[in-house]
Length: 320
Image 1 (cartoon, rainbow, N blue to C red):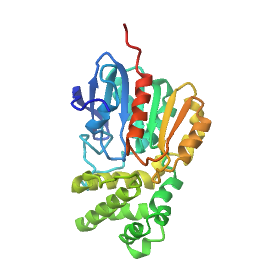
Image 2: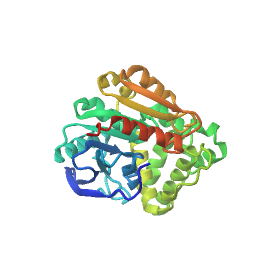
Image 3: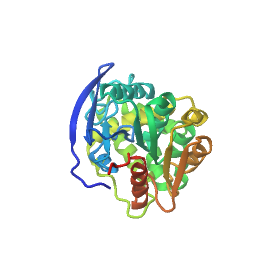
Image 4: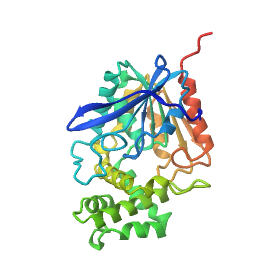
């Protein structure tokens, strides 16, 4: 990764409507090639490490915190914060508002995990705004993928999944677990909400733990982060990302002419590689890079190096 210490040279809060204000920041070279980061989760926020995936001399990098998380307001960690105006179409509109607010004609879009789903949805709706796509830990948040993460992976982590399932009321254990958790996270009893957030995040930490040397995510030690993250993930997953099921794969032809690199670990059990493979077959300008022994996210050096190689490939040529 590029050295730590890359700081934003500009930042702000953009009023995107519905009572929401989205935090944005720009770093790197103000005259560089525009790029935007779409973080995962939903609800993770755009932490400083994202800045280090781009050559700061070549790129003008825009980070934004999606609705309800990070430095954007209102905070989904607060139970009174409504999520009614927090959907994928709202997030796509926010991205376009930020682009227009900053006077950017087109930009490279980088996304990881949930950020891939959002990046694909955005690019398929606004292909003229996208110069390239760099995507890692490819997901499309279909109902099948949600069922895989919340139920089928119990075959791989049976003990941990049993705890995850048994957190919900017994009468709801054979139904949609994501719906059951969402109901618990909306319970008037704060103890019920906190237990749901804690156990949801515990399970999140399990199903991304397949790579060697995995350590628990320290963010889950923060009760506000747990609540924010659990509320937003369950909100989006229970609605299959507010997209027609299978639409991202079906409409991948709209990305013709948009170069892209998809980077995925073969050991990514959280998001199996078939999603990236299927996309690569129908997106004519995509390259698929499979990393043999790595899992979800930037879980190892090879995945990180592949993302850096992609952003370096797409950076503008340096003048002599």
